[in-house]
Structure formats: structure tokens, C-alpha cells
Length: 485
Ligand code: GLU
Image (cartoon, rainbow, N blue to C red; front, side, top):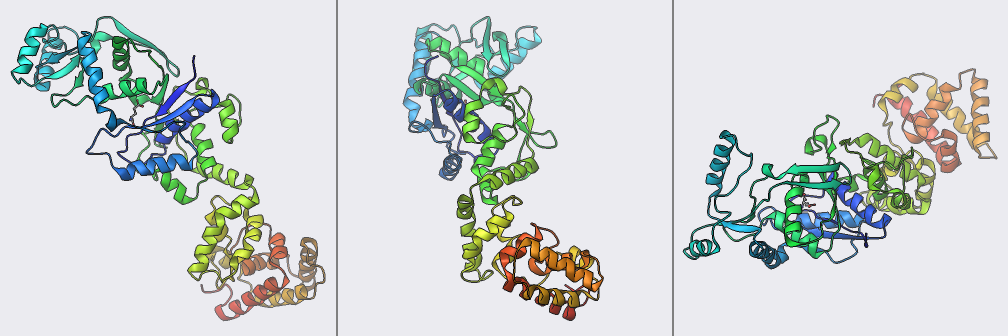
């Protein structure tokens, strides 16, 4: 094949859907893998439902994911003249005709034909009108549509996902190409624009599979090269129903706001219904481009699993270079400083937060929410369950103060020395290690779980740690053991 040319053709009648974006990802990967061109066409002929807001959302989301087009976008609504010319050409070549039968009448004719045991498709009584009569009736102002004169036989094509698909022509109506108001229909616009853009490989959702035989008829009638088609199965929600708003967030931009990285969306969505032929679960952009092939696309629907996507995001966060991660989290810290939640200058703790939480964070926001204690002092215990379980001994305030004093006297501030000092302290008091270590975590982080405790202590430094141990001791004396929160 000459250079592969593929396109993503969204209708700006809604935000870019997380399921819909997979079609864009597949097309983009196909182009990149084959050294071809990825094109974008905005299918905005439905004036009632298309909006500039949706269009901007779609283009923003594609850009955010790095799915950039290799040529200028084509806007379908600017192509009307050409679409009409295509219909004219079909009429001239005898593949289309004026049909004076109204849609209601057409439905009745089809039904009567079926009842009489004939074919299951509408065949217009006007398909063989002489051109003189057709012209005369049109000139007399009789309303009419232009319909395609469906041939006999069958339409066969080899779908790159589903294999050979053959459709008998006697199941296809003489379909409308141009409505009685003179506007060409979608079926014409798609073929005309794909031809104009020299698209030679059409990868799109399964929901278009029944349009394909009709589109092939149009290509063949005009003597245009027929592209290769690949129809990808729909994405389902956990309940095996088509993925929709009922399943939670659907717009790509919502996922962006939640803190998903473009790389994670790209990796997870590409592997939803496609596999690289081995057991890799995480592929970065370059690896996807290298491995992508329509052979790996399954012919069954894939199920969207938001938890898995979240796991993939966590994996990509843990692999991001620290500097990039800091860049992603810095605005979130700035927001907290602006709102007064974090003190001025909290930003200098960003590298510490990244170091401590990188391997555990699922989203950038985790660094400032779960990791808030890196930036600011806890003022209460936020984990009530842990407080009830771990801060119920009357002796806890005394032990916290005791350990604070022991820590204050340490010359060496390392994970090892801190752990040893804690063990020695517990032994001296004849209490279990757990009576000390859990309250210490709560004192320093206000939570019952998190990164390695001694690593946190080392990173926060002696002054902060000693201060927080004493703070929790005082807090418990005031609020009781366990504390009333
Ligand atoms: N605009 C159509 C859609 O959003 C795509 C048409 C096509 O890919 O042929 O479903």
C-alpha cells in the first residue's frame, strides 16, 4: 500500500468520550506504526447538535493526549458544495435517481413487498423513470429526494478486525443520498471527505459496520479506490452494557481533572481491546507505536475498568522522573498556599513529598492530600479508626514525650538510629514496640498508614518530629485516650 492515511472523525455533539478516544488512539498508533498520516475531520453537519464548546473540548483532549494531526483539520460543514457534486455525479452515472416517493410511502411499499414474500428492502418505483419524466416532475416542483440505485448481488469486504463480511444487496434499501431539502446525507459526506483526504484505511467503531456496504457502493459507483476497513468493538461498562454516563465519568477532560496522566490513558485505552501479543501490561508511547497492529485487536467487546485505569496511573506516576512529577504537583501546592491551608514557602518541601509518596500515589493530588503533613503541621488526627485503635493506652502521652526527649538527644538522625532508639525506649519502658511506633506515625502524619515511617522521620528532620510527638502528647492529654475527635 502507498502511505497509510487514517483519520479520526468526531462529531462535536458531545465531549470527547473516554470510549470514543480509543478510536482516536488506535488510528494515531496505526499511522505512527506505519509511518503514515493521522488526520482529523470535524463532522459538524448536524447544526442543531454541534457546538463550538464540544469541538474545543475534543481538540483540547486530543492535544493533551498528544494525538496531533499531521495535516490541517477538515471541517465537514465547509464541504457541502463538493458533497452535492458527488450526488450529481452519481445521478449522471446512472447510480442514483430522483425519487418522488415520500419516506412514509416508501416504508409502506417496503412492508407490502415483504408481506408478499419479496425482498426485505425498499426498491423505489422511480428508479427507472426516464430522465425526461424525472426532469419534468422536478421542474414542476414536485418534492423529491435523491436515492442510490442499489445493485443486485452482494457487497463483500474484508474487515481487518472481523474478517470477510458479505451483505446481500437485497437487504439494503435504495438509500437516500440527498434529502428533499437539498442537503446531502452523512453517508455521502463521509465517503466524499474520505476520498478528498485520500484516506485509505478507515478504523472506526462497530456501530458503523452496517454503513460500510452502502459506502462501498458509493466508492465503486464513482470508480474511487475503496479503503480498507477495520471496525472495533464497543467498550462496555462493568455491567456489560455499553459504556455511558451511568458508569461514572465519561469525558476525557473529566479524567484529566481527576489527575490522570496522558500516558496512563493512552496505555490503558490502547490495551482495551488490543494486546501486543505478549503479557506486557504497561506500554509507554514509544512501545505502543512499536507494537501496534490491527492483528492484535479483538473482535469481542472489551470492558472498561476504572480501578485498573487508576492502577495504571499509579504505575506511570511511580515511573515519572522526579522533576516532571514536581512540575505536576507544584500548582496543587500553590493552590493550598493561596488558600492558607499550607504556610508560605511550603513549596520547598515538594521534593520531600515526591520522594516519600511517589511509589504510593495514584494521582498528583495524593501528594498534597495524603501527604499534607510534609507541607504543614497536623492539627488533629484525620484517621479516626486508627486513632481509636492505636491511641487508647493511658500511657501513650507519657511514651510520646519520653521518646521525644530520647530523639532530641540523638546525635545521628538516620533510619537505623531512629529505629534503634525507639526499640531501646520501648524496652526500657517494658512495653511492646507497637505501643510506640503506631502513635508516632499518627503524631507525625495524622494517619494510620503511609510510607515507611523511619524514612518520613528522617526526611522531616529532628525539630519537626520532636515537636509533633510533643504535640500529640498534649493533644491526648486534652482529648483523652482514645481522643474525642
Ligand atoms: N462522525 C462519526 C462518529 O462520530 C464517525 C464516522 C466515521 O468514522 O466514519 O461516529
